[in-house]
Each structure stands twice: as C-alpha cells, then as structure tokens.
Amino acid sequence: MPLLSYLRAINRALGDEMDRDPSVFIMGEDIREALTNTTPGLLARFGPDRVVETPLSEQGFTNFATGAALAGMRPVVEYQIPFLLLLVLEQIANQANKVSVMSGGQASVPVTYLLPAAGWRPAWGGQHSDQPYGVFAHFGSREDLQLALLDFVSTRFVEFIKLPALKKPRGLPRLRAMIENWSEWGRIHQSGCVLLSAAVEYDGRQDSTLREHVRQQQSAWRDEIKRAVGLAVQVGDLRTDTDPSLLAFEIYALMLGLHHDAGLFGWEEANRHTSAALDRLFASYQP
Image (cartoon, rainbow, N blue to C red; front, side):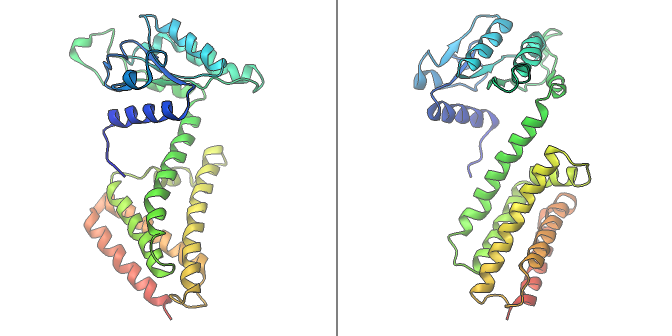
C-alpha cells in the first residue's frame, strides 16, 4: 500500500474516478492551472469538457453542479478557499441536500464538494480566514460521510491483512500471517485506527445506523478469523476440539490490547507482549 500525501491521493482518486466513470467531471476556479495542487495533469488527460474552468461566481457554478447531477452527471466542485462555503450554504444545504427528500427519493444529487484545508494564513486577512467545515455537520451529510469512510477503510483493511495472507498455506501459517499483517496495520496506525476508534465510540450507544454498521463490520472480521481457525483445525495444526469462536475472540481481544497499548506505552513493548501472548495461546491449542 503506497504512502501518499493528501494532495497526491486526491489527485489520484480524481483521475481514477474520471477514468472509471465518464459522467465524472471537475469544475472550479483556476483548476486548469492546478492552483491548489489537486488537479495537476487532469486537463491533459481528460480535456476541457471534463476539467471545466468557472468564473468567479461560486453560487452560480454550485447550482450548475446541482443541475448537472440531476441530469445524470457526477460533478466534483472545487472551491479555492474554505470560507466560500458560507457563500454557497443555501445552494448546498437547502437545495442540493434536500432534493432526495423533496422528491420522495426519486432524485438525488451526487455532487462532491472539494475544499482545501489550508488553515489560516496571514495574507488572507479577515475575509479569507474562516474554516466553516463544521457547519455542514448539521445538515444530514455527516452520517453518510462517516459510513463512506468506514466502508473505505474496511476495504483497505481487508486488502492489507487478508489478501496477502491467502498466499500462505491453509492452517496456522495463514492464520499467523493474518495476525502479523494486522500487527503491521497497528504499527502504521499507531495514532489511531478508524475502525477500532469507531468500535470504541459506538459500542455503548443506543441503536443507530452507524452503530449497526460498525457492529456488522466487526462481526464480519471476527468471522474471517473464525474461518481461518477452522481451516487450521481441518489441516491438523490445531486440536479437533478447538472452538473457533472462542479462539477468534481471544485473538481479537489480544489485538485490541495491542492497539490500545501501542498508543499509550509505545509500539515495541506492546508488540513484544502481544507476540508472546499469541505464542502461548496457539501453543495451548496445538495437538
């Protein structure tokens, strides 16, 4: 999994989606010159019909994007400066956001709004220094964004941990490979894993869409561990009386401890203790 800066990741994501879906296009001020460094190379690859330069009229081209989305396109709108969100609050929150509700679910507005997160700069002055991102958390889009983020990270999690392990022989080698990859994921995300943070945040909350989504994701991953344990039993690496659900729970609990301790006490100590505990655990289940 390559490590990219946010700008390069955004640029790659835009290019990938424009390659994949001809209805995707990007519009905004100075995007052909890639002033914010999110669109370099896109004009040469996709041409002026899909990299659309707009006039200095944020309210106008925001509404244009809404109309294009209703007509079947998937526009990406880039604003150069965060405070411009305040200019288009009406167009986004009160118009595009409510189309689905007002049409009884018959229409939707699949627009992506792209903002730089540059923080305050001395030369911007009072008119350009606001950072109003949080305003949009009050208009029904926050939960959709959280769900999309969880799905994206979950996909990367499986790609990073499970898929490489499938190259190993069935049984304990594959199970151990999954755990080693999981440990490496924890090392890379020492400052916090989105999936585990979500599990901790929502485990004690009342039923909600997000809580159920997190529960399903964690349950699906637990099932993957159980499946790997079951294969280890089948090939004779673990005792025939091994309970896959119990061993999966024990592995899961140790990995939660690894993520928790890595943040508080450092990765090396946490990983050393977890590795020793896993060795003892597997030894207790071997024939």
